[in-house]
Length: 631
Image 1: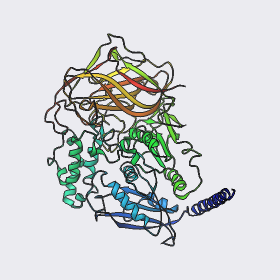
Image 2: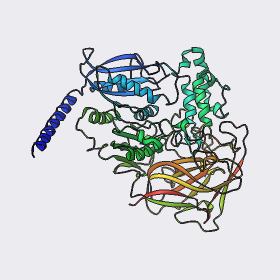
Image 3: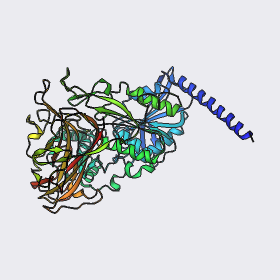
């Protein structure tokens, strides 16, 4: 009767010994080593296209070390590295005992084929990993690395069914493109228009002809003027010289419905396709993919065992090593001091089996780690930044179970209260002229370049805003409706997902409603005029008010309920500050401008001025829902 338990215990002891031995060997292989690099290894895909990769291996005396080891893979559309220098991450991880493969995605830089937005990255990633697993230096385990589009290639591979993919760290990663990233409430995020205009002539197959490259460069230099002449029509701009890029952009601008066109990386609806592996999701409250990062955490924790970790800082896109973003400082603790070492700790644990800080110490102590903004004193630092401050906090879930959904109701005369409005509270209207849109000042933006500002900014125009040069606050505009509380009697922490629920009507058959949450600082010696700090924003295109799966135009004058999803946050609104909600009908060039005509998306020839109304009486209690954390 005791034979089987004894054998089991003996086997368990052997397994434990082997695990200790493997950890010791992995630790011994952690370097630092010399690095051997092979440039432009052409990896065949299933359709015969070859993709260029650089292979980095630990080395001694110029020769790769013998043995099989786990691989770090990056698939990148922004160039994997020059022939002379390569990529710094490739050298770093090879020095620490990893095989590293950095690959140009299809149709980009040294790779063959034609680029398509993420569509090929699932099968191409799968074929690349299968190739890696067959190499003499591979032990069959592959972890992925990268940010933004490069993070999106991680999600694409994780949903492809690859048997050798072992872990991913998607940072600010592309996903859920039809929900709140490329299309947002049915509107188009123009950062992708900007991405195409820049990259069609930089790293594409078309720029290999010098004359074509020069024309595309001139087009990119004139992006602001092209923005003011949307919609984009096929064959009417120099983008026709890069037909694959033009074709995608024209279709994307006109494709508002969240269907199979946006299916790639749709984790919200297809989380069960995601491989059951350890996942570390990295995002920022001011990142362009913030709402998708938290949504992916919710979806994946239900679909896979993982484990799935989440960290959300006060960061803008791809800037985890910085503590100041826009005009605001969040304190030195906000920055990850050594992002490479931090990621290596994760890979060492899951790919090498090393018993380290994962699951034991920051930033891996708990599965959810968030930065709570707003604990600063509001002074001005030596660089002229607002000291908004903040601190890290470990949590057990997202959204937080202890958060209390609290309604703040829009009311007459710009009031915002936690009590429902009276029966006769009425409505407030604005006149929306599509030819004079409200300028974007900061927010959840990437691929901004000189078109938009990222992050936390005072909501005031000036020479730093190309389409809002006058030094006027946005609150002074007649097409911005401002609703704000009285100065707060005590601190209020708001942590979680944000939504604004409105009852609206319009004189148009289609229009947009935008909403923005602000933390309003009172006047102080550092900021004599106060400081209107943007926290999160969102938009709803009215033809998609019922569903993202169909278009339904409005009946002018009819009142409709809508919900505008803002990006998630964690912020303390301090005593004496005001909580403010701005409602308007444009936020340009963050979102494309609605012409109010009801014409097909990206097919309008006309513009109509609309009178848009927000209703805030007892029968139409428009409000923002704030997830309040009790002190």
